[in-house]
Image (cartoon, rainbow, N blue to C red; front, side, top):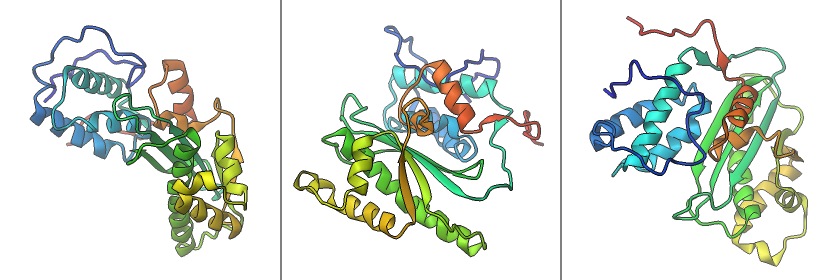
Length: 260
């Protein structure tokens, strides 16, 4: 459909800066073609978390794709071309949950809404991940990070209940790693501050599950924040490092061709 079967692969699905002059692509700027390819890529995200941010980005312009959006879609397809045999391995050892949460405050240059992302590991196996643009504009990085923590907390509670149904009981709080010290302090502070009333519901929700020992929020450096790959465009070395942390790698069992 995109006529990119013989395209040259790239090592990064997105770019930190768009080129100044983008030639129009008569195929990918067709809204019908753009929507069909993007819809197919959304299904691919079920096994390829490394493209989740890129797919989320191009999915925001399905109604009227511009040349820059077609450029990003083409770049993503070229990245997939070079990583057809990549996947996420599943191991059966160490069945304890741990999660990472991050947000890119006011990352959208037009709406100034934040993009947040999180992922959860069952032992060394990646089992859950999400990329989403927040519905309202956050007034601070702490607010955007805290909303991400609240969304991740809800996902963790569901995962813990699901694992319990399978007889895998989480006897200790699930560790959530966050790189925003203010959000961590707010989550662990029993005193509710007047300046945080605009996120009161999220604050109470996270606090309740900390007190019930369902979760535990721990600090992590920005360099080691795995969820950073879900929130923004990254340089190629940084992207490849975090892709490794997500355990996305070449899997011999993955079929690199077309199944008949």
